Length: 125
Image: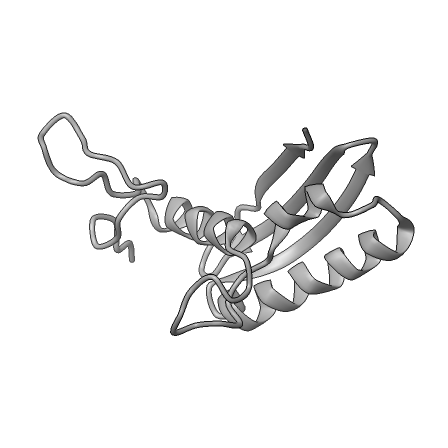
């Protein structure tokens, strides 16, 4: 069963018909939710202060094996807590190369047999 059309796409945008764009499928909506979770800093949402993965802040941190481990644990914990009912995480990789952060999340949306990959990259400046 699909609930496409009941959700607003992320990032929010207006379609050619003047209405807000909706995700094409539940899998696309779950991908949008993962992206929102990663990009939201804890404390950013007033009524859900613990929500977020906080990856945007990582560009200001000194890269180290300790930070990589903490980041991986933080993201894994956030995915489990906030989206555990919507997906199964199959793999999570966090890499730092100089000023670049590379996060790869392989997940399977609930009720789906297909895995999805989401890669987040951020370059410090």
